[in-house]
Length: 91
Length: 417
Image (cartoon, rainbow over all chains, first blue to last red; front, side, top):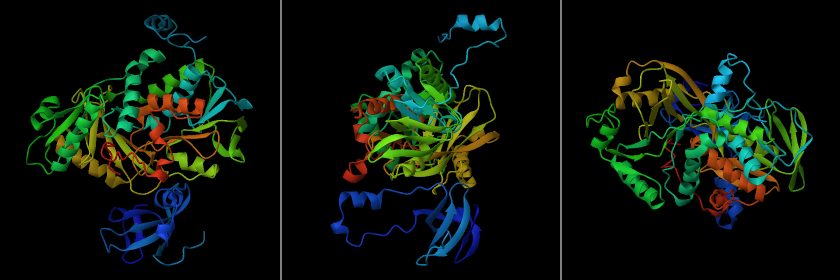
C-alpha cells in the first residue's frame, strides 16, 4: 500500500486514510423483523478473507469522503477503487 | 523414555560438547486416524494437546502446523503476562492462566523464564484515572492483586519515567499488578511440545490444512498437504488464520485479522526492571533478559495477513516512548515485525463449540493471547474432551454474539482497537 488513489483527490499517503471495514453489508430494511441470529450476522460476522476483499475507506484527513476499494489482503495490493454507489468491478 | 533436564544432565552433556542431547520432540509422519487433531502449533495449540493428553488421557492425538511450531504469534508477541481484567468472566479466565504460569517451569521440566516483575498501567487523563481505579477495585473483588499508584509512586517504582506535569500527556497515576510479568515465549511452545510429545502426541510440522471434511453436521477429518487425516474432533487454534479455517467448514466468525507490530532495540544494561503499559498514548515497554527493550506498537485498522503493518504505527509508538522515557532518545532499534491478530468485537476470546459437531474454535485472542496460553490450553482441552465448556470459559462461547451477552474488555485489552 502506502499510496492510495482517492477518487476525489488523487494519490495520497496511506496515513491520510481510515479503513472502514468490509463493504457492501446492507443495512436491514426491516430492523424490527430481524431475528437475533440475523442481527448477529449483520453486526458482528465478517468474511475476513485472506485474498481479494471488498472494503470501505474514508479519506479522513483529506476530502473526508467515503469510497470503496478492492484489495488483496494477503499482500496488501490495491486492485481497484470505486466510488460509493458504483457497481463493484468483477474480479 | 524422555530424559529429564537437570544440572546433572547439563554437566553430563558438557563432556560430549553438548552434541548428544536427546531430541525434544519427534518428527512423525501423520497417521491415518486420530481421536482428535489440533490445527495450529502455537503456544495455545500445543498447550491444548498437552492438557488433552495429561488430564483427559487422550494420547492418540496430533497437532498440525503449517510452518514450524511457535513461528506465528507465539514468537512475535511482547511476552507480557497479567490478569488485571475488568469483568468477572475475564478475571476467572486470565487468573486461571496466571496461576498455572506460576508453576509451569516445574511442571514442564522446562525453564519458561517466568519472571513476576510486575506490570504497571499508566493513566494520562481523568477518565483513565477513573477507569483504572474502577478496574483496581474490580480486580481486588475477584481476588486479583492490584494497587493504584499516585504519580510519585509510579516514579518511585520506575524511576526512568518522565513524570513532569509539562509533557503532552502527563502521568496522573497508574495501577500495578505485582504477580504479573513476562516469560520466554519460545520456551513456552518448546516446553509444551516436549511435554505433549513425551505423552505420545504427534507434532506434525510443515503440514497445512486445506479443507475440513464434513458429514452433514459432524466432522469427519481434515485435508492437509500431507494427505487426509480422519478424526471426529478438530480443535482450531489458528489465531489470525481462524477465519480462513472457518470458511473451509462453511462457518462465519465475528473476527477481523489485523497486523500488530512490535520492535526491539539493541541490547543495553538493565534499565527497566518491570513492564510499563500506557493505553492512552499507546506505548508499552519492558526489557528482555538479553537487554533489549521490547516495545509493543498498535494494530493497523485494516484487514491484512501480511505480517508487516504500517510505518506510522511504529512512529506513533516511538513518539510516545520518547516522551515518557527521554533516556531512550539515542537507542537504536534492532528489529521490527508484525503478527496477524484475530480481533473480536468485544476484545475477548472465543473458546467454544460450534454448530458443527466435533469442531471447536479457540480464537479471537486479539492483541493479548500470550498471557493466557496455559489457561487457554487447559480450558480448551476440557471443552474438546467433554464436548462441554469448563465453567471458566462458558462465557466465551460463540453464541454471545447472538444473545448480546458480550464481555467488553476494550479497556483492559491495553492495545486500542
